[in-house]
Image (cartoon, rainbow, N blue to C red; front, top):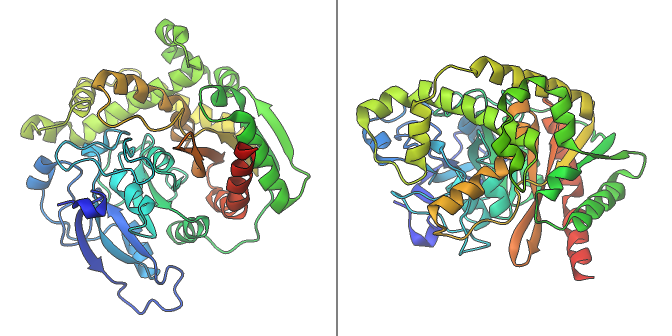
Amino acid sequence: MARDSDYGAFMERFLLQPSSSPHGLPLNTLTFAVKDIFDMEGYVTGFGNPDWARTHTAATSTAPAVLAVSRAGATCVGKTVMDEMAYSINGENKHYGTPRNPCAPDRIPGGSSSGSAVAVGAGLVDFSLGTDTGGSVRVPSSYCGIYGFRPSHGAISTSGVTPMAQSFDTVGWFAKDPVILNSVGHVLLQLPEVVPVKPSQIIIAEDCFQLSSIPYDVVTKSLFKAVEKFYGGGYLVKHATLGDYVKDKVPSLKHFVNKEITDQDYNIPSLAALSSAMRLLQRYEFKNNHGEWITKVKPDLGPGISERVLDALRTTGESIDVCHSVKSELHTALTALLGDFGVLALPTVPGPPPKLQTDGYALEIFRARPFSLLSIAGVSGFCQVSIPLGMYNNLPMSISLLAKHGSDGFLLNIVENISVTLKEEVAAMLKS
């Protein structure tokens, strides 16, 4: 069971060395941890819940994503705690405890890949594997002040990974260092070494930044300076109202816009509708994957999660075809907006991590807000990276960059090339 000296990040510790000599391999000398959603031969995949672990047998093979980094020379040191059935972005688990956020100990770490993010943030491993369906890599990476990458949907095999909702499930990863983030990405995505390409345009999603508590001027100016320092000038900067663009270009969304959403503060109606479409399809697929097991076993589930699971079990097939239309329309719309080498900049989450033991109702309201931002990559299937920018008011702050489906290598190279300067520029501007 997770031990306090490990920040509560691990379910179990073990040492799995690379099978062949790691010398000369790209991930030689690196250690990693694996979310307890990945199959590892000889271990039960616990999926964050003791009833799941009790009713499942040990895996007979190891997930290809775990094998890939292991064969590239990395050493696995254990399996990490996760939110039950991957159905939360908070990082709290009533059975196994809440992994301790290394850069804000009185705050939640974010989930559902909570232990994987904490293990990296606390320096217990060099990188870790997680999954991101609705935001389960992006949220904890932002809350724990580290890098988190959600790849293009379908770019990395999810075989041997317990499914949550296949339309959105991805294998993601965390690192404290942008060079390691890129190296791990090259292995998982099987990318060739390419000459870094300069971004053709950077689009600032202005309305999305208005949802956020991060200092807009500081972050955007620092981003431009960092890009210019590495790539020189010659790229376009555009400011977009993403909500209006999505409303115009994704007609099927009108099905999900309701009066209640439009009247709320802190909201972009079209993106809130996007979030509704994503969560409906997620509930439907979750029910198809796990409804039978839940009905039979009646697992003991924690607060918040038990309600969401109940909602999922009540979901019918109504409007599911519209969700798929929304997916393809958004994919087409954002492909047109970004072009081949465009990058969209937006906040990863609306603000800093909430405090531990926040009242359940307040946490549910807070939980709804990030999905307007998270659903952009989630529904389009585009790749997204969350970049840590240091501390702001003593709490971790981040920015996200998003690129079109299939341009993961391009995005990873940008992160490696600009991150150090970006963080320095932010720090300097916050001081001045």
